[in-house]
Image 1 (cartoon, rainbow, N blue to C red):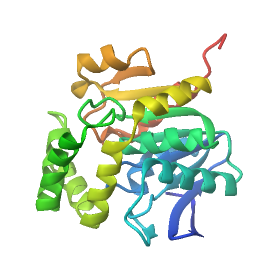
Image 2 (cartoon, rainbow, N blue to C red):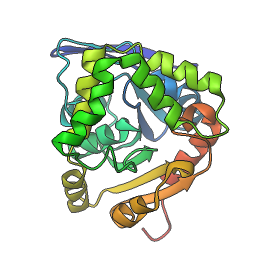
Image 3 (cartoon, one colour):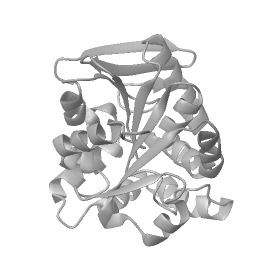
Image 4 (cartoon, helix red, strand yellow):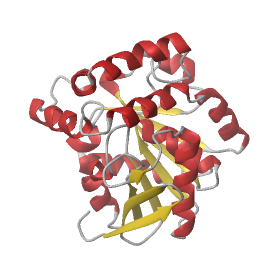
Length: 264
């Protein structure tokens, strides 16, 4: 992150790397599965003009390390909550890309903040809500067999028709660097995450969730199933990794989502 400060925090069983930059209302950025905090670099630089921004590498991602590959979404949320508390950023808006929004919800439920914004997360019916065991195993099998090839296929399917193929290839190469065992376990943990139960807890606390979904991949059944559970806003910035394709526009969408609606 340009103009930011890199920090490393040792917690039980894990060493977490993260960046801090800017001043103003706090925002925490949480990357997706097999990704890293640098994916948010352009977004973070923009938001840091008027926000205090934390970008985190989750365990087994980027520069963060861990002793065990066994992490649930609850575990990751608790870890993010601990970092947010240590940095005096409780009450932050939590922004998660893909799997990161599941982590963001669990972090807020643990006490980290009051506002959740998802970047193309929560809106894929084959990933969310909690998948039955046979579907989980069918999804995980290609990653167990050939992790790099499965990651490449995922990235290609997640690209929009006008996404630069070289960017898709770069993203896939970076994601494929993840430890395969940890990657499979974390993907399995996401597939086992009980989104409906988490949404019920969020509703009870009056938490507001906004999903900024890539319009090209937003299926009508998602709107029917979950449009009344959280706010779903289709966006036209590219494919699943639109935060890398259009970082300035992504930052603008986040700012807009953070702006309180008069009378609420």
